[in-house]
Image 1: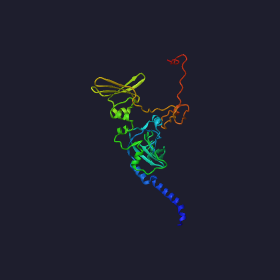
Image 2: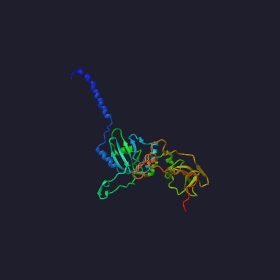
Image 3: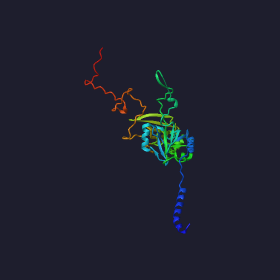
Image 4: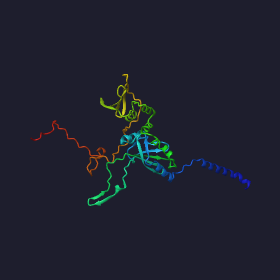
Length: 331
């Protein structure tokens, strides 16, 4: 090679070395392989887990991104729970019933999923003089109580080890808890967690927290204070300390402790704040469940002026101007 070409080739060689070094330093993140896909499905299918986040009932489940962001959450999740009820609550044990690996996500169904699945033999029919008959008709009253969570990745599902997948699912599933109480405590704020471990009750707790702290009450008294109904849960018997836990709805509003020496200690100030599952006004309209009972006759169209699409109530008769019920029946 002639010496005059050497200065021109040096920048090209330097550029090639830099590109190769950058490629070597870039972390390899290959798409998930067929073998890894089968191994993960085999490892996690039918696995028992403890729930760390509430799962709402209905066809819409949870979405968990690989950075740990969970949706719906906050007020949106509380509205769904208030409208449809929970399919699983923190501390509940659930079974992973199905796993599907899609383009950019892994779909995990728990407790059978949100949609009732029919067996193949429930589609078999045979005909006769009286029409078509199903061999094994499905139960129309069956109500699936499962749900699902989609673990979403950026663009595609990468190669994953089982422990990596468990770590990514940590916001919704607990694979390491030894009991339901342990899994439930791990989802609570430190102040409430410490109180439950010490078998104490704080004003503002809900029923589930009181049960986790003190167990089922030996005695219950239902009373009424003006227009407010409440329950008094009584723990302990003299000569021990006796706790009177007053619950209005799902919240502890008063705690009275009678000590052995006769001292009475009363707590009424709220000590913990919890999110209340309330449906805000002006939120999304409630959709009528598909199998809800109806007063309409078969073939009768829904009245658009009637709530929930049912028949409008019959109008009341006009009042009698004479204040009488009408003529007396003939004798």
